[in-house]
Image (cartoon, rainbow, N blue to C red):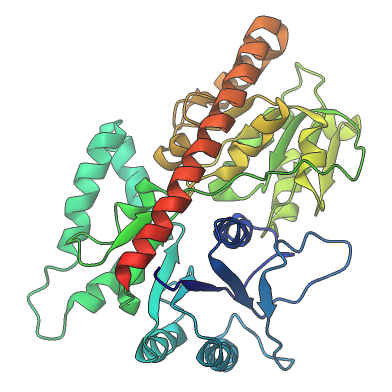
Length: 400
């Protein structure tokens, strides 16, 4: 039997509550359930009365006032992580979401590889430049298949500079690919994001879609709301969110969660300040809830109009609770929801969203149909997850 012991190195971990943090924590849980020893390795300390994720985690301390978002602080903590890895006989280390701006990871990954450890990188999303180019191509072609084809050629062109100063590593830097760090392998959260990081197939890669929560643990009874939205940021489709709240023809109630990195409340509030919903007290804005299950058990519909996503697991989780979901048509989001959600045309008018919501709330049969489709999608994702985690273990064994 091949010896496998996995560590995921991540600067952020629950109780931080972005999608990547939950994804990492659930991978660790799934690997341990399959009999593979796996640990999170993070500077993030636990907090009382918050969801701290899996218990399989080494929370390595660091001296304040180190700023982990800056290269000096990142480099200092990575030395601590390296010492831990050196002392604990890992076969695989997976570095979470190290972007090319995080250049201290270059040295860290090379040093860990010198220990004889196989080092991979978890890749979540495409960078802003690539995403904007994708959006431009969709506006031009109106077809995601054509966008992928043209985008692949564009990315290959980033390596085609006739200069002695330009090499493949700089090409990977230009497209913000994890291959810039020269890992042994890459794990991506969706086929879509995996399509644009390795145009020449240089590194082994594996697509591991995010896992759903298995346990429904309701700690708080919340007031029921008609519509829930999360993370009202520009790229999350906040203009749609604002237009729906601002619609004066309906008297819906709204719950808006600011999300894992939701620091844009002020901008969003300006967009809805004059709405009748605000004046009538029909909008609840929350910075944090410990258990999203409580939210889903107290909502009739989840709106997820994100323009870009690495995957979009948030669009699937409400389905566990029988909540219909509306999303914007984006390839990685489709990977998540399949035909289990109401899919709105990419870039369509906000009025189409409002009219679709009106129809759903008016038509009980349609509402129940999307509840059923959601349940079916959840079952599919759980079955897919069982197969993918077994295949991931086999993938990692073959790397040794």
